[in-house]
Length: 421
Ligand SMILES: Cc1cc2nc3c(=O)[nH]c(=O)nc-3n(C[C@H](O)[C@H](O)[C@H](O)COP(=O)(O)OP(=O)(O)OC[C@H]3O[C@@H](n4cnc5c(N)ncnc54)[C@H](O)[C@@H]3O)c2cc1C
Image: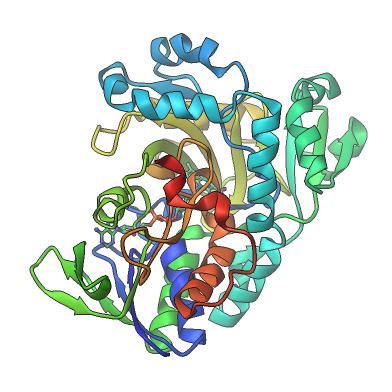
């Protein structure tokens, strides 16, 4: 049966879902109060990695020992604001528990791998369909290290990646220099994951997918969704903050870091937290990487994008409403300039742009993807944390399969929102 589906939120999960639903012949209304692909969305400011190898949650065994450091150093790669600690403590305990052993990490990696596998290809196809092929590139991503020994220091993570079928090439010394001539000689070892890809302008990509959805007949309601009207267990409408309703037979909750209050109304009280991240863009950069790469020393991704050279990273636990700490973006800028000595130091301030956004993060690094508990007419598709962009293409397909009542193309049982009961 063809339905009217209200998709709540037009970040990458929402727009990819809308396109797949339209492909199946459904009528779609995208409910989005902001600019689709705009700065309010994590989908705007991410690092642009289509990193099908990002199967590990951020938490690792022994993380608890570092928590005092996270609290003491507000500028470290992971920082927790003191004032927010009481609120975030239950989430933090789950976060540490999720990565507390290699066996647990392997279980998560085995669940995430099918969601992320081949997604550079899926995004390439989606972009071609939407007429924005120039925004997706499929030539591999790098992790770079000061030395082979530093890479071996992360042996557990790479061992798990190998176990779930991820392959890579190693480049050392001159071989690395030959492909990345601008990279600081402080880095002498790299792994290249050829299956992965990158996006050259994530905000523009989401905006292009949104425009494509409209061109295929989707409608846009520019208001925040507030809740649901459910009668006798069936969805009748999504209610809006302005008091209006969007009458519909199905809905998708894809409001990123703001999805929890909506999910709670559907019987899914989930521990969704924001892992705030930052980026810095250097416009008109005259040096930088040929491949997009993660620099191990700075724990940040550098991506040469359409509008400049972007460095993105940092995890700051401080909630949705606290003001950004721009010093964190300055740290990214300083690392970037040091890592590519051909860049002017200091980089001209008028060509530097900074951004802070909200990763929608579940404590175990896996999204909530599946039917809601209270009403099977509503699909939950949020909480993708660090991998929302790469996972977006397959998430959209799975959402459409669930709305149609077809079996999803991968096992989504590990992503059930009910796992947090
Ligand atoms: C610094 C940083 C780097 C990252 N790098 C990568 C990367 O390289 N690769 C990767 O895969 N992922 C990366 N991520 C994660 C990725 O950006 C997110 O997981 C992804 O963008 C989440 O998409 P989304 O559609 O769920 O949410 P969002 O993009 O945040 O979109 C949610 C939308 O919902 C709207 N909304 C909110 N409330 C309501 C409401 N009540 N009603 C209607 N609409 C509402 C918002 O306005 C917004 O447009 C990164 C994130 C950050 C912060």
